[in-house]
Image (cartoon, rainbow, N blue to C red; front, top):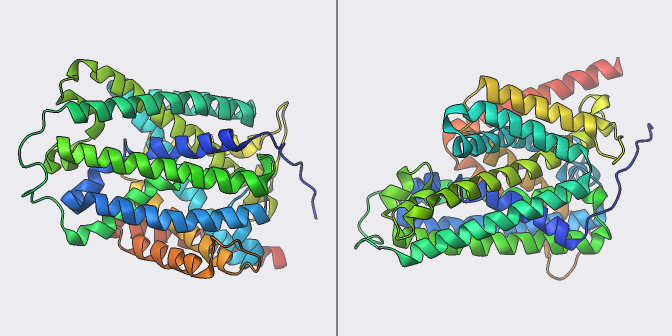
Length: 414
């Protein structure tokens, strides 16, 4: 079997947690709150709780597996080791395709906040610059993520203060006709998109110091922080804005400040949103590149993607390939509507995670088998209650990947 150069273990608990939390916050509050509120209305908080509960099951399963298999690739590797090649491939393919589309969405979000009239060129430039940062090594990625995360947390604190100061129009919490109880699960599926950032920690398993200790702590710490922030901020927004306004807004956090006593400081929120989308984009490019590298090592993607090199060892071929595909999407597609598509792919990814964790024999007390079973069921329920267009699109992409791999295996045998 071909030997591959390994990455270097340089990340501690703080760096790994920062990468996970940075990717969650950037992808979450600035992207999914409005469409989720449109589906669930005043029951939006219930959707966050459900998504958080499923995410907790997935986080525990990810932590179990990452401690057992401290390699880059996340559930692609776990699925192959515990369940077989095909489940692993489904997880990896769903992650790579869904998260590549998410990279384009995050880049375009950055462009729209910074320069709406030139959003696409600015987005392309952002992808190019952040790919360059990744090629300089994982410690540079972690350092920039910490800076961006600090800006985002300050921005969210400012939005929370603006929401508390009001004014608060009468009747915000009652009587609105937006959403319904039947929209809670589809909304939870969209909100799950905002909790998927801790997957980046697992995909960096080969670059984490003492992975058996660091990875579980980083995953659970990042998830706990994101859940508390989402729940508090959503409650404040629902108290401050009519739910119809929240559901219809393309920038709900900016609207919360514009409609408050701190309206003159709205440009700070724009800057924070730009930093959030950059942080999420940086973590996404990093995670997708590592998963693509792992799949190439197992010959499920072209072999050159497995190459690691450079002054600071990184999977530079995979990183450049991901950047090229993201730029192509930015130039040819409307990628603002990929949240549901990405959520379906990531929920499938975590369904495989839970199934793989269920088969582990050695498990800590806080990770019983029933928790893995609950996580598996929760992922499938949320996935198939997403908007039909998202389900059908991702199903077609998965079918294309399965067909391509089956053909490659057949040609290889002959």
